[in-house]
Length: 195
Image 1 (tube, helix red, strand yellow):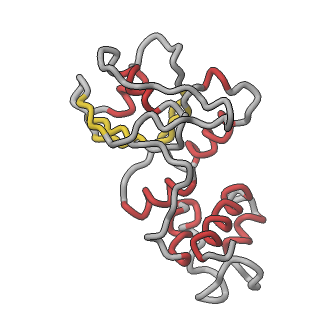
Image 2 (image 1 turned 180 degrees about the horizontal axis):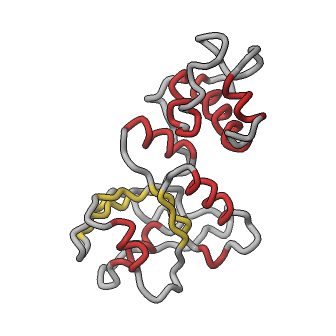
């Protein structure tokens, strides 16, 4: 998810996080993680197929153009089915062999919503790359880092073991979550090819 958010920050588009199938995740910690992203200023929504209507989704979309992105099997097509019940959309089940979603959407498709919004359903992905972002720019995709960037002792700080690293100090002081900092490090290493 953080990879998508880094891409959105670099493209200058607003990201919204939708926790779909929320009725199936009891005890998973996902609602708490969603709340953490909401605290960072991201729009969030927890929803599921059993809800009586799609007003929660329609309100989130408004009259904007929204692209649904995510891994296969997270229910992107099911969200569209809730918004447009008369549209026939192929919705797939989870693969029993791999417990992963099947690619039911194979091309991007545009849907016009009754409220004036537009929704683009994209094919599901197994992994989302950031080849267009340099390792040094990954930190710019983590909005809570902005207050601390440029405050390290060394201008080319890698935020690893260097002394007086402002990001690591912010983690130690509780201003940046350890989980998000670790996600940043993993993404940075994968983009740099050192993971």
